[in-house]
Length: 618
Image 1 (tube, helix red, strand yellow):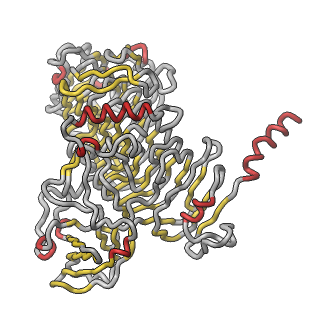
Image 2 (tube, helix red, strand yellow; image 1 turned 180 degrees about the vertical axis):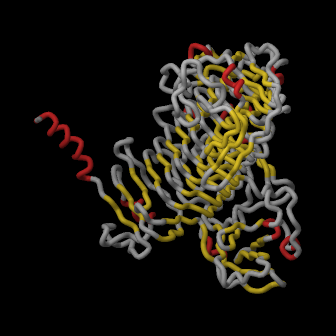
Image 3 (spheres, rainbow, N blue to C red; image 1 turned 90 degrees about the vertical axis):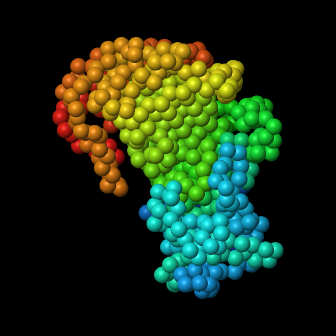
């Protein structure tokens, strides 16, 4: 009894010294931050909070950039920023703009002193950086919003006076609502076509801050951000060779938890788990004499010298957020996402305007997804769904729902493995773009094309097991993948794209429907020739259903439980397929979390009922 009492007292001591700071739109930054005397800004609370403290923000809209000056010291002594339970708390990187003057029918103009913007004017800042494609015109980090909906930037005033539908936009009618900006030494001028709306009678906002929540220095560790609505930030392009500033981001830190937030309307990236500025800032753009891959390999070397490791970077948790209306990515991270978990997020409407392009656009875009778990996310209308670029090793992509992505659902680029992709629903026209090797694909429903390509022009790193330490660099010859217990549907779907790769596939238990074709040397494929209706996705917003015909013959597939022993070792790194903690891998649960039998059902649903079914998958 005495021992338990001492243990309780030991655990209670840190809590006794923790402080809860309250913030309210009716508060005062000179107050003590108590519940009775709250502070006015989150930034004022951040300046006072110490490891172990909690900042509780009450209902209202806070137009500020939160720049945490410090973090916690451990997972047990973190600094928590939270919306008060049950209250709606909004953080915006924008300001409301009034005093619009009529300019032409439907077109209005506002003149803003440059002093209004302080040190950063998004209407003088052009989006630029490595692997960015401006499509031959300027793009500012600023934005104009009418009643919460962003307008399309025009490169000319004529495009505001006489707007034309933008052919690449997913919503062409929305592209008729346009804006244009000019600046001189004293003023910024914004013109906008509001059609029949009077902007002085509506809510019109413009981006004025480059982020909503982002530390200005690396190493702000162990911070929790929970329950906020964050929107409207003038974020810059976030390539892997630069500091990646998102609407919310970690800036080369460790141990963040970003959960239960609604994040929207970032000019470029929503959440960033990226690298720092010191290891390189758009190095390819500044020195095009060397190719981009060489530059990034040099960035990796510099990061290792600066302490890039499990002990100092990554191990973040990003879960249960809703992320939408971002021009580049929902979640992006270069090097800084190692050993993290990205789970339960709903990511959609990414890169929908399509006024600019580039090689960093996806619902989730990670470089160096080392021992990263990507599970249970819903990603749609994102251009590309998940993009694992360079050094996906020890990664697991599991139980995700992807559909209505116009590029592909999953792109694995120049990775050597081992990585595991299991129990996913890949339902877009292209399910998998594979420019890697050493991947293991198990129990997936693949309703779109599979693309396989080697990459012999670039050499990329592979690492020691569960480590950032680089062993060597190799190119991608292709093959050396595993495909077990998948269902592939449709005449355009085939694993024959691997027939010409120099290294063989390891296969078993796959089922082919509606004309899908197996790998030439496949073991025990089950090809069901009877015609069946295509898979149909019913998106009802908060709920998603999958309607398809599950054939009785599905049970004839010769399957085995997928384990570390079955998968063997990835060829290049010579490493086994195992969990991030080094324990053996067993794929023993299906898409819904139901346990699998020793002879499991092919596809993502264990013991799926035969016949025409409608399943709720979100």
